[in-house]
Length: 484
Image (tube, rainbow, N blue to C red; front, side):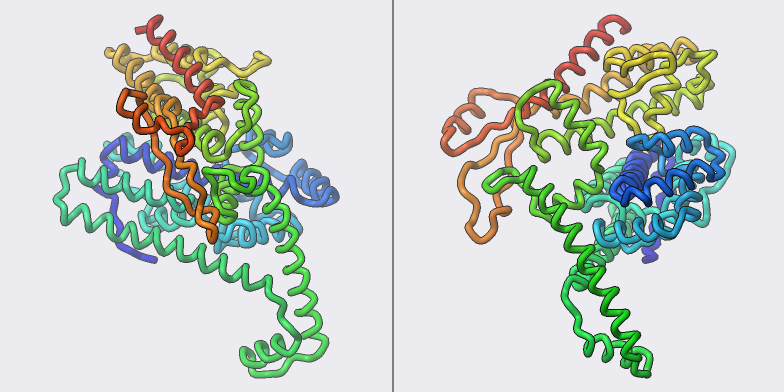
């Protein structure tokens, strides 16, 4: 859908470019998690055959090939060689990927459509990462990847609430850039139309897939073909189509059964807060099995309490992505000023390792530099990043240090807030329909009085997540006191 969006005046704002990079990265992470899940769930013979094919496939990006052949949990899906792999990989993997995109994720894409989306996101991302230099040179943005196209891809590949968040950031930056209310609306209205159109596409795809689950008899198949092509099909053709239809329905039912078991694992009867099956499915698929497993391990190291998808896992994912973006933008700004953040010989192994982990979709809390055997503690990650300033010619190094630590501190603070939920039972006709909870930032006298009745209110302090955030905050405070 062409809505005539033009981000032109907004792209002069570094903060707006950072916001777009954040959403582009999330879309790339989603594509990587889809690919990894398809590969891991393939039959053994297909996994082994694909491993053999991948080992012999020409790949110019040595790091990407290592990540894929070693079955790394995540990688940078925006790389050109990855889209080449999607285009060239054997038919059995292409078919499985297309079915996963359409059946599991309700995306109106096949494997070629996914690779085209990633190609376009990569081109737009590359321009954003070097925007100041290119703007100074008077270079124009890529003409083949319009702002309309970017929004449509993000609308398809992000969770619905993230599309609303993206629209909010567009409105925010349009207002802060000095545009008149009319001009802000001229950007926001078509942007919303494109995002809504992408969401409608996913809903229609979901309806189509649900329609495949209904049994279609041979007479109906015969009538459909006759109506469409004008000629009645042979009995042999009808039987073949019926067999293919039955196979699709069995595949769909098997997939749904496995995913329903996952939903019950996180949301037992009566559990609150909760997502219904569809809302859980798109979030689970978006984050990915490997990332969820890694976060569960990290959370369990801090607490033996049961883990909640909404209160612990999803917020930790968003926190990790937020911190990664903060560090990415900070390092990118230093690199523009000549800091050799990728050169281990000049700057040591830690900063390049942190930069590579973030750029390839890894966790900031799971960085293992070359020559070391364990992930760096959070405080050592921050200390290593600040040493990059020793290789910089910037005069206001104290400000640079403060900007990094203050931004990360701002991302950590909400993780220590409590959540309060109403214990009243949900309506009998809809166990998923409940009032939204309350966020408590500070337990003052008025707040304690308001939620004093524990028979009505359930206070969730999110201890596993809270302990991680508190530990990182203490390490940050220590680094701040030692360096600023």
